[in-house]
Image 1: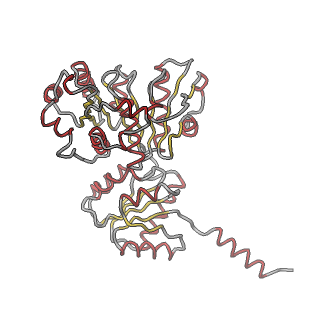
Image 2 (image 1 turned 45 degrees about the vertical axis):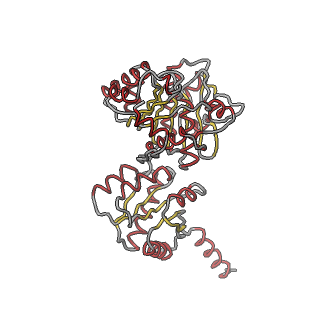
Image 3 (image 1 turned 180 degrees about the vertical axis):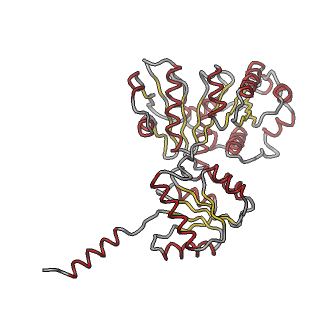
Length: 411
């Protein structure tokens, strides 16, 4: 016997199952935008986005707590849409598609946001135009196409001009500050394939490098395999550290670069500790064309500054696209320095972007599992400035800081 009630119930359940679902969040600046987005989604029967005020703190708190497919950022009150998105881009997970709503009617804005992997919608917009746009973005996600699919990590190389200038320590501290304070997902890649102390600076206990055999070269080097070689430090920070009895350092170097390329879509930043082995022309060419930023770490000695000059000239010959930041690290007391900051500026043609003052307690702090980014030393303030420069922020040292005094004295 035909049961009409049962048939209607089945159709009702089927309709519920097929209901359109898009996990999204709106970071808003105006009530007009909130109302339009709510009405548009409700009218089309799509679950409405989570509504939060547009602030860096709200973005940090929310986008990392749940799996967000589409992030809508309202910038109708922004004076410069491009700069504001550059400022917050490191807070947004690469896995999410980002739609920017703004009232800035300029082709350059659309082009700049497109280069960053963000969609742009000009305000005012109708409800139907908005929902059609959101559906198109969601469709692109399903097909793994459109903007956002190529949004990749910023690649930062930290290169010491000689051994013992603090490259590994600085790499770890930058990684912690980016992941813990700036809430940017980060991957540290270790280029010391025979030893090193990266695990100590990252506070990892009973740490062992991942061992690679020659047979690994024949493996399918996709993102899933690359992820299996990564160790979790915490939810926002991971590390890749490899060793091998079969492969030489050149082979391991090429292998790590291939793995790094596979992981670019999973992190906001990839930090590479180049404290060892990056001295040949091939390395310079790779750095010049593959890195977004190179942090060149020096100490105030003749040999270290000469090496910095050599690297700078090599990068220029290679037509480097990497932004280069010069960091002077006072690994010794001020009076032990053999060159002054003014002499460094004259020799290099530019002054150090950041000066890390000497900290006598540094060794003890490391052994006590304390981190500079958490403390209030002068060197900690200099570290904060460096991290801000990496993010494109022009944060200057305080007027009364030791860093500022060193720069004024030209020491």
